Length: 396
Image 1 (cartoon, helix red, strand yellow):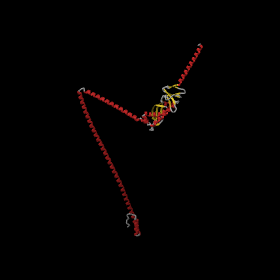
Image 2 (cartoon, one colour):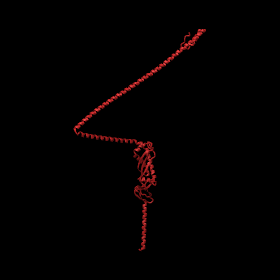
Image 3 (cartoon, one colour):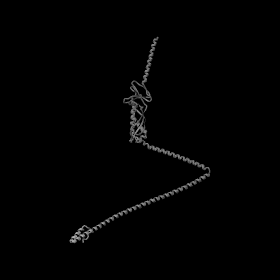
């Protein structure tokens, strides 16, 4: 083989090597681009043809509605032709909820704040539901829809319970909201990892329902604290008194062992003190008895004074009644006397008038006699004049 033939062969081999290297590079790039991996906090959703046999590969989801996808978690998968992959973030996200004014079962308006942690479900069904409804949407849109579901169920549970039930057992309340909301979120592909009632307050601050609700409990706790403090102080005083008593007893014991004479002296002093105390007690008792007797006498005297005062008032009342009766009798007598006087005056006036009339008629009769008027005519004139008079005088 000459030099020219060797050169041509070298060039051919170099070209084949270059093609092989290029092919290897292209194959590497192709394989790298088609091989997809899922991180520990991700799920890889693969769609397209030839996903595999669901009975042999439990990562393949397929249902009667025709949905079919392969879900990779914590591993990798080389995509076949016409297959696509979409990563899904499995990290939980937090949603803060604040309800509008909600009326509890008692009709009390309240506002509640709650915090929920939500993530995409771990099951194939959950991830498939999420992929169907939310794949491609923005995080803000997803959080908004989840917030609506949680807020609706939160308000529904608030309206069914009383303020006391909610406030006294917040854990039970949170579980109720979580259990009911989870039913709807399952269909959306989400799961609630935690839910907690952060705050419950009056919708109208002037009502003060929640503020007043805790006052009896606070008062009870303060009362128990004061009682415990008082008991502790009492025990301290008793312990100190006991120690003082024991110390005194020890001191007395040491003192009595000094000498018998000192003991006898102490006994005599104690006896003297006892007699003195007895005498003082008797004196005080006598003083108290005397004081009680004096108080009794004062009380009796006060009662006697009150009795005399009541008797005097009764006497005054009787005198007043007598005076009123005498005044009434006098008034009646005056009225009777006045009536009799007026009757007597009327009688006298009548008699005087009658006498005057008699004189007038008599004078007239005398004139008739002088004129020669007959007797019968004079008699008729006299009777006619006194016809209506009760006491008729004689016409002669």
